[in-house]
Image (cartoon, rainbow, N blue to C red; front, side):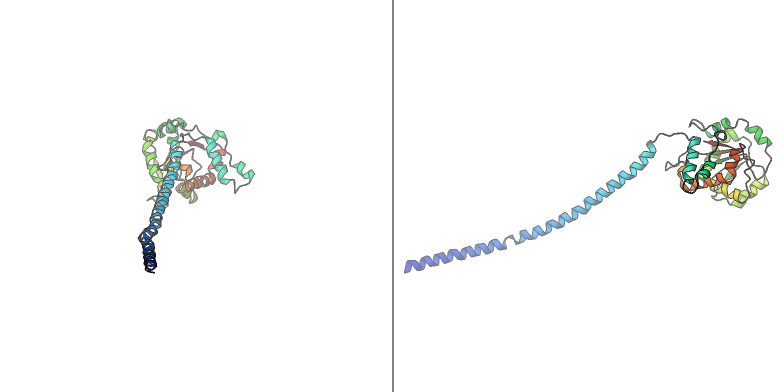
Length: 267
């Protein structure tokens, strides 16, 4: 009938409208979904930035911790036991128990250590009050009466400047490798009488090895023990310096100490 046909048309119209609405609903979210695909990219960019910040923070912290430990540690003056212990630790893996015992030095060969109140001149005056008399009686070439061992050429020059009050008219020789050849130093030692030698263990060891420096007349061997460089290292904290010191000690120094003709001091 007429009414049934009209109702059928109306219902078809509603369904068609619904279909277009559904189609619109399905097509509308497309730009929204494209926005969602951008979000993971934003997260991805943020994450590595955070990770980078964390690594730099931890790096800074670690570096600060090392310097803080050194800077805040109370300065303790060196004592003879420190040298003995370092020597035993150094040779413990390569020497037998009997050989390690042979490295022990008698207490009598050690002079009074610096208690950190001394300048170099005042310390040397205390450990060697008869220096002027000793100096006058020394006439042997290719030798010195006193050796002061330190970690570098720059420190050698500083020490020579700071001992003016003690040395007086004494002849001093710089014994380091920087800008000075071994042969030049050997000629100087051969040509004139020298009372004081200041330098690095490596060069002193080389002069002894080549016969340019005779250790037998040596009366005092002083280590620049307590001074720290810019990195807060003492001379015996530097592996290559420590190695050369022990090698030098074995080139006749230990036997001279045991015979009590040579005294050791820690400045």
